[in-house]
Image (cartoon, rainbow, N blue to C red):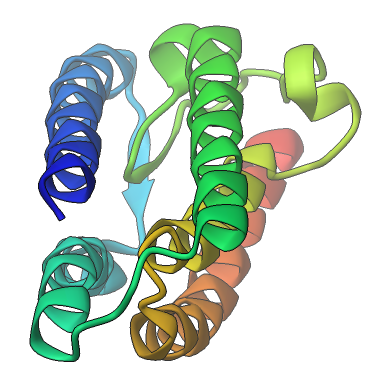
Length: 171
């Protein structure tokens, strides 16, 4: 469990770095008359991601979930690939990347990096991580519950983000 706890701590630290980058980018986009959309669902998203990390720690400990090497190591690879995809998105969008939905009117959609292949590649990374991170240590209840909760939240988030991007294109 120690190494899994360290993995979860590393993911939590990565989240804090993301939030720092997002805060900096929010200031940059808002200074350029960026408009924020979807403020109402943002606290739910933060709670979901925080709850995921806590549940990943609690379920294996409380329910004595084993580390199954084939499943566990495969899921570690998925987690690492999800992180790589997430940071590819961050670097591709540069100052426009954010954990919030902030759009600067008159800017163009980015069609470079992973955005050449998928409209919302960051959410591919999020979905992969929400499934894989708990399964590293056989926390299948956490994987199932948070995958379902994330699907509901993602439906709201994608509607919001697509509407905001539509306004950006129309502006």
